[in-house]
Image (cartoon, rainbow, N blue to C red; front, side):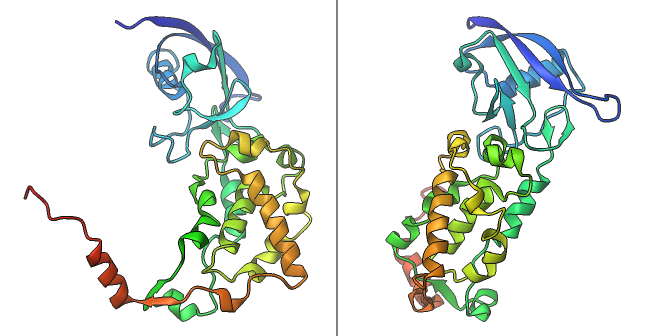
Length: 274
C-alpha cells in the first residue's frame, strides 16, 4: 500500500433548511500521493459526512463544475492534489462572490446571465448566411490566433470569485463575460460590437476593472481574462474614434463544395480493423 499522510479537512457546511449561518466541520483523512481534493471529498462523504454537497462532473478539468475556495484560493477541486498544497490542514469552502446554495455549491446564475448579456455568438450582417449557411466563413490562421486564447474558457466561475471588483460591485460584468465579449468582437467573422455596446460599454463594464490580475491567476486554463479586458478597452476606444473593424474586413463564405473537397483531401486513412 502506498504511503499516506493524515490530513485535516476543514469543510464549510451550510444547509439552508436547517442552518441559520454557515459553520465549519473537521474531518481527518489518510491521503495518498496523487489524491485530489475532489477525491478526498468523495471519501469524506462516503465515510464521514453523507449529506455533504458539492457540484462536479467530469473530474478532468473540462466542465468547470467543481470550483471551490481551497485554502483561501479559487481552484478546481479535480485538478488540485491535496499533498501539493504542502499543508496538514486543508480548508474547503464555496466560491466567494456567489450566493451559497448548500455546503460547497455556489449559485452560478449570475455568471451565466452576464455571459449571455454580451451575446456570446457570431453576429454577422448577412443573417441569412448565419441561419441558412451555404458554406463556411474563411478565416486565416492569423485571424484565428487573435482570439484563440480566449476560447479556452470553461465557465468555471473562478475568475469572478477572485475578482475584487465583483466583491464590491455585484453588477460588474466581470472578467469572464468581458473577456468573451472581446473574443467575439475581435473575431473576423463577427460585426456585433454595436449590439454589444449596451452591455459592455457602461459603468459596470470594462472601465470598472482595476487590473488587479487576480482573475488571470485563478484561471485554470490560462485564458488571462485580465488581458482580454484591456484588449476590449482598446477595441472600444478605437471604435469610438473611427478605427474599428469594418465590414469589408469580414470573412467571405467558402462554398460547401469547396469545404467538402478540403475535407476529402485531408481525410484520415481507411480503418485497418472493421
